[in-house]
Amino acid sequence: MSKRPEGALDSQMPDADQKRRRLEISENGDNAHLVHPEPHDHDHPANLIPSLCAKFWTLGWVTGTGGGCSIRDDAFGRSEGAHEEFGPVCALGCAADGPQEPGLPAQAAGRPALAVHPLFMAAFTKRGAGCCIHTHSHWAVLVTLILESQGPEKDKVFEINNIEQVKGFGRGHQKQGNLDYHDTLRIPVIENTSHEEDLTEFLEEAMEKYPDTYAVLVRRHGVYVWGDNVHKAKTMCESLDYLFQLAVEMKQLGLPWISNVSKVVTSSGR
Image (tube, rainbow, N blue to C red):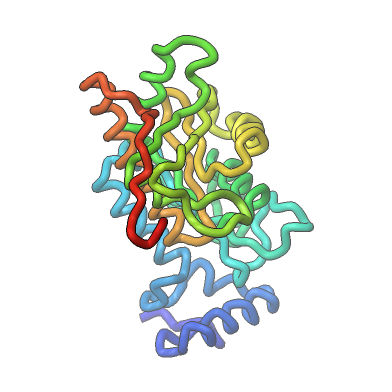
């Protein structure tokens, strides 16, 4: 049995104590807790990301060579490539070629940095996201193809309203509350590139043009979704996939994605 590094995390510690201890160890320059977290520390990114990716695989989101997830945690020290003003961040990727050890330069981890790393970092630095998920959902790809078939200038944004699942999305960065049933959800679409990291500039442009979006579709490729924390990112990613599948089936039935549905006035006046 391998010996736990001196001062390493104790799985019996309360969550607050575990996070404080991770920060203390990180400040002392000891990264052992990042590479070999305690197995019962379920919220540690090195444990949580593989668990999430396993679930995403069953949904067909990260099969073959595609898809992944990254979690930001202020307790883990700065990730390579993060802007100095952004402060502590940990970007841990889980994709087909395996996770990259958190908080360590790619060279120290003994493998090249993941191609999706700069895109995850865009969500962290531009939107203060706590988690970013990338999927190769075939429903997402089909939606981009349907939009493409509509011709130029009609293929740059996915829009849908008057569907209950729209309520799963926040109103926008630094805004309170979620969208209403009658609100229109808008997800911008960017064109795919031969190399994943080259998508970064276009992802950032889409974020600037659509400041309230929590996702960006990539034509013939998939989707990037982010949220303030893991729960919100996962909720919106699941909601999006539901809406993408629904949108494809609505198109097959000749039903429009944008509709004019009168608001029902209830006894409460809402």
